[in-house]
Length: 469
Image (cartoon, rainbow, N blue to C red; front, top):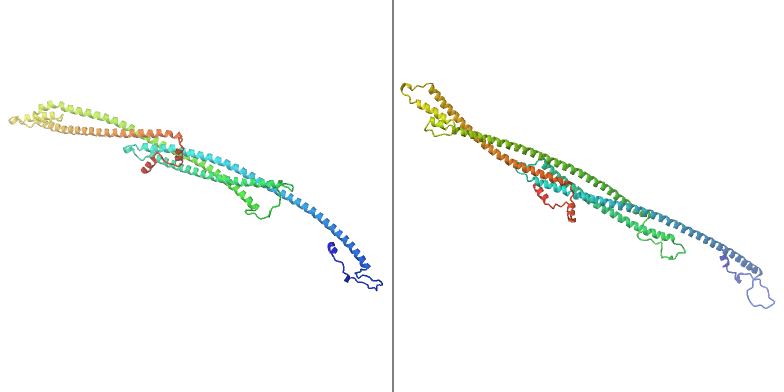
C-alpha cells in the first residue's frame, strides 16, 4: 500500500472503539469518548502517515526528476538522431543531385555531338544530289547515240549501277538521318526526365536543409494535426533510389546507343564515299574505254574512207582508159567493115578488119578460092578478137559494178563516220560532265534542302529513266 493510500484510510468510528463504561458520579453530556491508547495510536498513525507521505512524495519527486532527465536526454538524442538522419538524407540527395547533374551534362554533350553528326550526314546527303544529277545527265547524253552505236555496253551498265548505288546510299543516309533525329528526341526526353527528377531533388534538399536548421526555439513551429498520417504517393527509400537509378541508367543507355549510332553514321558515310568513289571510277573507266574504242573505230573508218576514195579514183581512171581505147579503135573498125554498126569495144575494129579480109578473100575466082593458112589465120584472128571483146566487155561491166559498190560503201562509211563522230562527241561530253563531281552544290533555299533530304526529284529525269530502263 502506497503512502497516499495509507493517508486516505478513514479512522475507526465510535462504534468500533471499545468503551469501558463507568458509573459516572457526575452528570455528563452524551458524546463519544476515545481511549488513551487510541489517542496514542491515532497520533502515531498521523506521524507515520505523514512520514510515509513525505517519503512517497520524495520518491515521486525523484522519479519526476529522473523522468525529466530521461525524457530530456531521450528527446535530445532523438533530435540528434533525426538531425543525423536528415544530414545523411541531405548527403544522399546531394549525391544523387550531383550524379543527375553530371548525367545531364553528359546528355547535353551527346545531344550536341549527335546534332553535329546529324548535320554532317545531312550535308553528305545533300552532296549526293550532284553525283546523281551528273549520272542521270550522262544517261540522257548517251541516249543521243544513233543507229548501231546505241548499244547496251559496259559503260551503260556501269552508269545504271552507279544510279542504283547512289540511290542506295541516299536511302541509307536518309534512314540514318531519321534514326539520328529519333535518337536526339530520346536523348531530349531522357534529359527532361532527369531535369524533373533533379528539380524534385532540389526541392527535397531545400526542405531537408530547412528542417535541419529548425530547433525548439525556431519560429514558425507548432502543433500540426495528425503529422504522422500516411500521405498518398509516399514511396519507400528503395523505390526512391530505384527511380533515380532508372532515370540515370536510361540516360546512360541512350548515350551508349547514341555513341553506337554515331559510329554507324561515320561507317555509313565512309563506306558510301568508298562505294561511290569506286563505282564512279568504274563508270569513268568504262566511258573512257568506250571512247577509246569509238575513236579507234572512227580512225579505222577514216582510213577505210581514204582507201576507198583512192580505189574509186583508180577505178575511174581505168574506166576512162578503157573508153579511150575503144574510141582509138574506131578507124580500124571502119577499115575492116564499112557497114559495122556496133562500136562499143576497142576490139571491134580488129574483128571488123579480120572479117573484112576474110570476106574479101571469098571473092577469089575459080581454083584460087583455096582454104589456105591465111584462111585459117583469119578465122583464128576473128575468134580470138571475138573472145577478147567479150572478155573486155565483161571486165568493163565488172569495173563499173565495182565502182558502184565502192560508191555505196563510201556513202556507208561516211554515214558510219557521222554516227561515230556523234558518239565520240557525246562520250567526250559525258566525261566533261563528270568533271563536276568534285564540285559540291549547296542548296539555295530551304525548300531545295528539304527536297534533297526527302529524295524528291525535281528534274523529271528519274521518271523518264525508270520508264526506259
